[in-house]
Image (tube, rainbow, N blue to C red):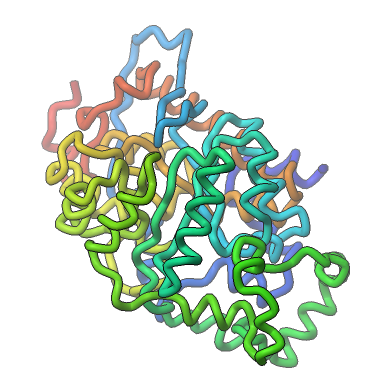
Length: 391
């Protein structure tokens, strides 16, 4: 696509996505909780750190490959689970998984996806499945069994959604369940006929991984969305994580822990990795960014688990800063959804290609040829780097 070929960074693809999506869908993608302070902080945190630029190092061969969650990855990047991806393009999660497979990076499928566990398994992507602890433990167990039967190498438990954050952009546009769109929102849909016609023609839009378990719930006057929202368990504790560990034999990941003490608790419960995340700034506003806590988390847990930074990642330099501060890799959500909205599978491929080229180029400029060679010596806080020796 001509537009994608002239998109040279994530911001360029974001602009294309902004033009493709009606305002309510764009705000749903971009928005955070309350004043969106945490949303902004996730991005700003990377600007507080500087990378070391070492010279006269042989960088003729650069290998950004690594291993995360038991998967070989072509670069230290994975794709976060995001709900209802068909909102942004009719090809939805299938297009994202295919692009991930082509790029050699792991893909996370959400419980709230509009594509089934079985369909994504057929793409051949290295895949993990994201889960919530539902009140209905039979639903949780059924999803576990399906993921295990279809080769999902890891399970990712989201723990920061005991209740929904206050997303005011969605309240103002009417992008809630059930929708209550304003006149301005309806006009925006009319002004984006390509998206609107695609949505009207898309007969597969549903919560594909829970619809069979729920059955004909609509006959009782309750929607599937209502049912799922009612299933989020506010009584869940670390004991439930221990239960989940006993039910799942593969890699177990906690997503949404951000405080060092919680991350240590997760490791003590037997998790293999922590996705350090504040849900993209969509839950508790004024919470710190994952990068703010990363060094302290690594100090607290040592090498007992992998750490994946999820939130605010927009550049290859962001990924390398996170690794220098103790992460094993990073995960992205909004950036690949920008690509999906801008151009379907090709748009996601473009985003991953941009990250790959940036990571390789930035490694070379740092004088590093392998991910394993990047250490705390390669980064310093902006407020202190002047007083630190440069070599």
